[in-house]
Image (cartoon, rainbow, N blue to C red; front, top):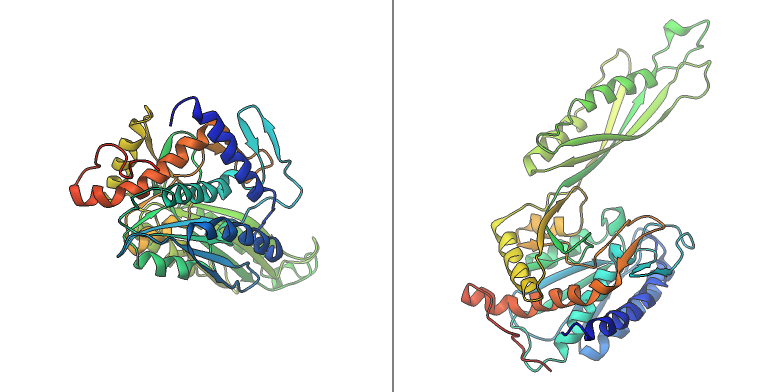
Length: 389
């Protein structure tokens, strides 16, 4: 791709991406998710793709499974979520120079669209990749993938590699993500009049405060384990000893063992004060996307592809999770952060860098086309495998 063609290509990609972004799909908006999946399916139909609409459940939208008709055996899995965070109408779709803003445009509708563009390009090539490409478009990643996790893990077990097009902040890819767990502690004490019978009461709020102090001690920056109590509530009125209280907890961890340790300690929480009861609930929501030898090999391939465009691709990590955490935990090499370059996701200012769209689409395409021969030869072959259209 020449420098002259890149601005034209960037505007073309942006025009297609904008159609996806204009259909706002906050998690749980079943109707609009269905509308968007209709658009996505229509984009893939001319490519001869096999399409399967997986019905949503538990208040979530459908998922769309796309299988491209090339290659054989275990292949490449790409997982792209189409749900977004900001309330409908709260984000202005607008352009500011080389930045284009929109709801969920970077995280991760652009990644989903760039994955489609890569498939579209490959479908027009003379020689197809040697490994099949499976793409799963999901509707619930922003709340932890409760209805798509099982599908992702099943597809991962059938695949050889996973390429995840979550956004990047620069020319980079992600080889490691922390795991995440969510918990809630509920404390039941005993209500009493705060003036005339204070000694008869057992404050649930005081107990939840003691529990939070103990939880804070589990944070260990040296190992990457963090405990965050993000929500606290309880009691009724100032003149009543609180009979009930609760807190919600977000945990991030860098190794499976660290996750297991925290999980056990939180779920086995016991009272510190007297005559109170504690109920702990929650679980590890996402395992770690571990930095493995297989993932680093994928990074090596991506880096060599980027160098052909005179781009130095950077390896990075993230404290936030993605569906790549699930594919990695199943045991297949996973490379994440292959999506659009942008920033400020989950905010009204979320944006993608327009001029970077073509090179990120090219990186995705080349990863798909080059993986087969690269595996067989031990190194990426020179030149374009497909030899053009």
